[in-house]
Length: 139
Length: 413
Image (cartoon, rainbow over all chains, first blue to last red; front, top):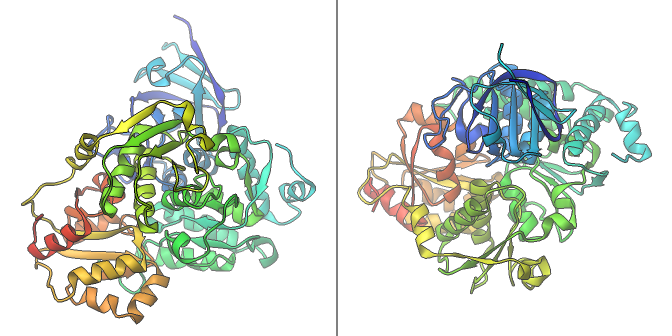
């Protein structure tokens, strides 16, 4: 198997590598997370109970309020944060938060629904400036 | 992104480090959304409660505030969303001195930047409503959706950092709802069941928000037979924004950009009915008759003076059940009026508490819930019941009248 390259709209933040945590669900730092424990806490969320720390989240879109912008920065400062978030469609808040937190974020994938293009556990390299996510072949 | 000479000077640091940071931040965000340039804004509203900002956010603001006044002073009027701590009433809620200290530190920094501490999410009812076509940079999704939709102003959802950047520069990247083409309807909904009270409006907004489901969808709504009040639009929009991340709606014949369906392009879309069953399905997630309740909350959005009177009329002369608390959140401006008019005394005479300048879900909801044993929560806000599940509550939804009656009975009536 070879590495698989997914093209997306140019994003924000640094180049990062990490494991994917994928769900066909949405994201709000305020509504969905226990930010002290570093887990998804809203019972209805498809990732409820799972840790988001140091993974690359792959989700559908952002929802809810503006608090997530400060929260990404706050989470990153305590190092209880995802390495990157990939969306089908980001909203303004998450992009603004990623800009302050210097967190990698990309959206609008050329090949369709990113929550179907990537599977949980796959190793990814996210290059926001190039608008490119590489699904790495595991050694 | 195309910049004029002044913007280039700010980016080069010639007008101080805060404005250099602000320009850099806006360019990063603007690039991701393909903004061609920046658009001047008339005013800014920033969400920044201490639970969201944490020590990191307070440190960030303190650094901004340490710059010389000419470099740090905001360029346009800038106001604030609700705080997380009512500094006149936080120990009884179980909020800590650390939380209050963080709050004080952040407020001090904001004041040094010339930010007006209005501490409200109903600025469009109480401070300075924007006008049709007015470009602004507002935080709080409820504020944005109301001002975009009901007033015809132009704002994206601006998180705290971006609102700050807009305040420092008097500009914001021109993308999203600043552009005519992004304000055209993309989904068309036909209402089949007329909303009657504020909670009905909230439920309708929640259902449409959930159906629309994205920041980039613009619902146009038909079938509304009566002109809604400002409070009705407030609950409708706040719930839609909460459930759908939706920043703009049109109601044909009500909101200023939609005198007709065709004016927003809705005539080219297929109408999707919103049935009574859709509304009932959403309500069914939130509590049932006979369930015990620990706390009733009126907030999200903060109450207008009219809502304060409505709550006061319902609770005056009654006593809340010993097992049930009631919290009412309003803005400092409305609180002062409501105190002068005797409404606060009437509400608190029942055993309830009125807080000023906060909103329940923004004030360490998890911690105050745990400190007070509040888990089963009842509210008339379709927004707050959506939020608080993630904070360890079991939220239930009812009309204002039923909420008060339930607080007296100690269970959902």
